[in-house]
Length: 313
Image (tube, rainbow, N blue to C red; front, side, top):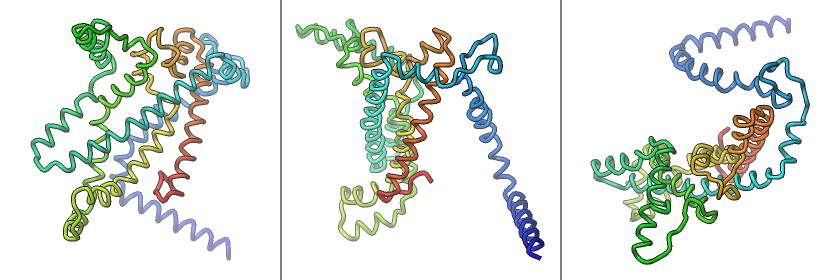
């Protein structure tokens, strides 16, 4: 009798599931491209992680290369420059998080307060434009301003001062990375917060005006709480990528004179994997970064929930 009841419940759940899928079939159909994308380009390549535990040989392939266990990981941690690379990666990533997220919020709030539609669209277009420029183009712009013969040093020379080697000096390199990253990505980041601001109930502002609250009070008590969850979500995602210090930008701006402060894990992996063809060490480094990123996301999510946020899950 009990088995029949369980079977009936299983059949009922199956029919309910099939019915739900049929009712929302077009939504599931729209999910197919996204599922295929993540399946092919994100989950499929995970099978290649096995070369992190092999002495990978291009001629022998994945299934013919000998297994070496954790030897590649030991090589990474015993590399003399590993802790310098890790330190540079963490410092640059923290700089990008601390100084890169606040301008997004500030720009979104400023745009939200603008009442002139044409002026708002103009400012948004101008600030959003640099996002479409490649880092090669941005480095060219930075070089035109900051090189020894650039505009900034030309101005310094005209005033009788000595030129400053901005692009090849340790003390300026990280600051240049942060400033150019802010200039490139702030407009794009503000769009996410503008979308969140659009969901705030306008009646809250009307009630605040009735209560005598000025614009600053409205921003502090309505606008900022309205985008808090989005800010926490983006912060958690950035913490998960804290070991990704922006390879494209760093690799293009990097030069031999700033290796001490600018060489990061990803640039080292590029040299090991592409230039020296040591794919096993490169894969082991990526695996290590993924594990650390997963742990940081879980930790940040738990902290966010304990502090009253919604977290990711």
